[in-house]
Image (cartoon, rainbow, N blue to C red; front, top):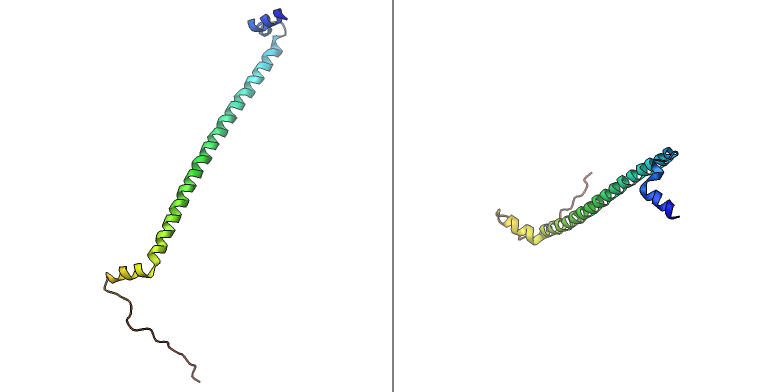
Length: 105
């Protein structure tokens, strides 16, 4: 048991007679490890991108709500009256009259 551990630590399994199958396995496992590391980096990159896009969506939604409230405020009759008063216009003092259209033969 003790001798087997020393042989592994010294790396004798890499230089023995049947070392070629050991090297193939080591290269295969190294290749899989590289693929796994690359996949993990790719997943982390996508997670960061998703969180950045979520923050941008929240910011744009907030801007949309602010713009919608401003548009509602600008549509109010009192605001429109004040803006057109600067150009010399104002509300009519006489109420509108109803026009009745009848068909003539």
